[in-house]
Length: 216
Image 1: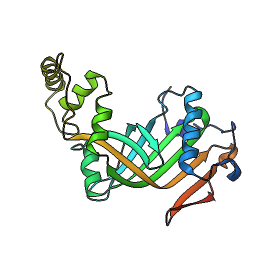
Image 2: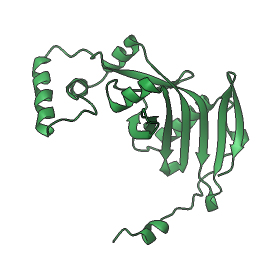
Image 3: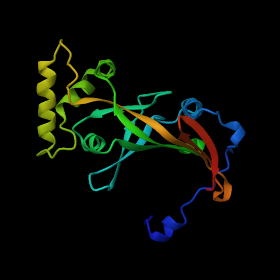
Image 4: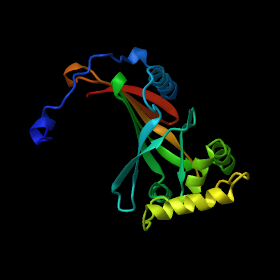
């Protein structure tokens, strides 16, 4: 089958599985997120912690990629990465980000915007030490977002570090660690029939969350 513009124009799904009313949503959007995340886990959605992370470069152009949520509480949403990567450099210049979760089996989406801060060294080390050894080595071996000559370069560096760390483990590099996105806006989207989707939006105003409904 050839993917044409006509094919794409006719590619659609009518969402009918659920609805979302203001009264259904917790007054604390982080608590509501945790409820929806649990639903995604219970539905056995593949990698429910996958999220799109959007940042902006120095020219203000948007930049997005998939990362993994590795913690959430009343303070915000956590992920870990190389501080010298493209996203790390962008967050240093402009410490604001947007996150998007999409759970198609539940016909749900969550959009989050907020300020971004680095997690402290101890928290980053604690998480790094829980990672499988090969993942630890990979974090050290990969000069993330930098140009490399070929795949062999990366694999050789990985094997060299693996041999050196045999039986000793590996320490978290200084250029690797966590961030926390402290939300100022969280939107819950539930797909509905005829594209009349439910959108319940939370905005933090002077430290207090306000809840409104948005048109789809």
